[in-house]
Structures are given as C-alpha cells and as structure tokens.
Length: 416
Ligand code: LLP
Image 1 (cartoon, helix red, strand yellow):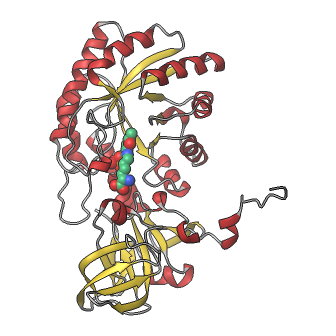
Image 2 (cartoon, helix red, strand yellow):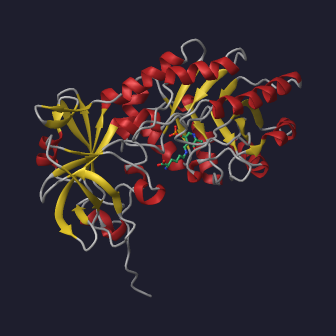
C-alpha cells in the first residue's frame, strides 16, 4: 500500500501534486509519503502485537532525519551498521535503548561510540570482533550487550548481491559454530550475551526461507538456555520484499504469522529490522525528460536523473515502475537513461514506457528505499532534494546540494 495516486490527472503524493513540488523545488527530487511510512510501521506492530517486540527500522534503507524522526515518534527503534547511522538515529530522536548494531566491519571508534551511548545490542559477526568488543567494553567500563549474528545457511532465493545467510556470504558466524562462540563470550568478562540474531537477505518474497532459518535459530536458543545463557532477545533481521513489478510478497501479517508460528513460544522479545518493506513504496524519485533521441536501434528518453541518484537498475538490473506525472498519453518502447557518462546509466531499459517528450515529468516508483541512501556525487552532480509530504503539506527535508557543497571539505595543499 502507498499514497501515490493520480488526483485530477496529476500524480500526487497524499494530497500534494508532484507537478507542484517540481515547480517549486525543481527536479530531480525524492518525495516521501509520511502516511505510507506510518502505515507500514503499523502493519508490523499489528502483526507482532501478540508478543513483546521492537521494530528497529533499518537506517541504511532511508536514513533521512525526517523519516527516522517520523518512525521513532511512532515507536520504532533503529537497526544501524555504522557510526554514521548511529549519529543519524540519535539526531533524529531514536532512543539508544532501541538501537541494534550489525555489520561485519565495526571499527574500534564506532564500537566505543555505541558503547558510550548505550545501545540495546551489538550483533557480533566474527570471533575476533567479539574479542575486540570485550576489550573496548573493558576500557569504557561497561558490559557489552551482544547477540551473535548466526549464519543459518539458508537460501533466501533473492538477488545474489543481497543474499546474506548462506555459507558463501561474509555475514555472521556459522550456526554450528555459534555455541562455541557463546561459551567463549561468557568467559570474557565484559560481554553479556542477551540475544541471537539472524538476517538472511533482502527482497525476499517467500516465507519458507525465514521459517527455515528460524527453526535452526530456535534450536540454538534452546541449547543456549539449557547451558544457562539468558537469551532474552531474538533479532530476526529484515528482508521482507515489496512489489516493484508483479511480485506478490507476503504481507507483514502473513510474515508475522509464519514467524510466530516458529518462535512465538520462546518467550523472547522479538527484534525486527525491516527496511524496504517500510520505506520502499513510501517514496518516488521525480525527474524530467531533457531530450528525446531516436538512436539507430532504439529511442532514448534522456532525463535529468540517473544512476548517481538511483543506482538500483544499474547495479542489480532492478525494475522500477515509471509513471508520467501528468496522467495518460501513449506508451512507447524506449530506454529511460540519465546524463551520466556510462552505458550502465539507465533507469529502465528496453521497456514500454510513457511516451514522454522534452520537459515532461515522470516518477520512478518504489524508490523510497535504497534510493537516496545509495546515491552519489558521480560526475560532480549535486545530490538531489528530498521532500516529505504529510496530508496536504510538503516540506523539503534535505535541500538540494549546491556546487559549493560538492567541494566543501576539499583542500588544495600549498606545499605539494
Ligand atoms: N538488517 C540487516 C543486518 C541488513 O543487512 C539489512 C539489509 C536489513 C536489516 C534490512 O533489510 P530489508 O528489510 O530492507 O530487506 N541495496 C539493496 C539492499 C541491500 C540490503 C542490505 N541489508 C537493494 O537496493 O536492493
């Protein structure tokens, strides 16, 4: 569900016309619907209302402060993977006690920062990370609350780049080895093992991989408890897919039923780390056609937005729906491409698209997740504005970068 629909022939976000925003803010821009974010969060809350749970929204998906603030005011915590994400989450008002920290490469500085602010839990991804965390916790004078991120070796049947819970992936500690590592951690002095964590991948559109992984995790939790380890939290990660094209992913309710069917009786507080299923369909990227060009073999729609603003099509060959901002018009086979000097710079390739002409606006649908957060300044292009809509109001929640922003922080040294 989302709130992007035609109103009086103009594609709108909630009650605000995207054409009006384009007029006032310029293009390209990301536009987010706060009602959609909240609706998705509520769907998760409802699905897991039968147990204690914390929904730790995955900051990497869309970390704009306004987005994080909207979700945290509605009760969400945060799943972070860097010191920068921790900083963002705290600035946006997320409570440290609702923050979980995953990632294979946490630096000593990042670990110290997270210990000092008192996050809920570190999801530890390797034995040496555990030793490092123990040492730094000793220096800070606290006990580090941890879960081991276990790798259950389950195939999530998604794009290879976003599958994380198989033996060949770099993430987590093999589930067979986890027991030994929990025992080692319990001897360490500054570690308190309070949970088990498992995240198997992203854009998963079936329930079985989640359930299969959790059956293994449940067995581990039972064994740990038998050994006297007080496991209070089960972090089931994120990964629930969304509909970009014709996928029919399970709803949060169906997902919740499947999860609780396996682990509902453990008495653990469940931690969820959804990203895409909260943010993906809560945002669009609006661009404008600069030129149309009849190539030798195909027609190109050359737009003012490209792979530096939205890299998913180039990186994963991902599908995003393209809608004209002004309703109607013909359809035509074309490539929608950006201005970047790379042949891989396309938003839609060999697709039947709205037959847009110079100056016309379009929306790249389902771009609220892994859109802006993966954008770059490649080709010295300022990053685009981000706009948040609520009802009949909109606000710029990140101003468009300027040329000065592009060089701020750069130095021409005088002596070399
Ligand atoms: N938790 C952890 C530890 C993660 O690594 C991720 C995503 C999530 C939660 C959130 O997963 P979600 O609910 O959004 O599926 N850039 C790719 C997606 C990469 C996902 C990375 N990890 C894309 O654009 O499809």
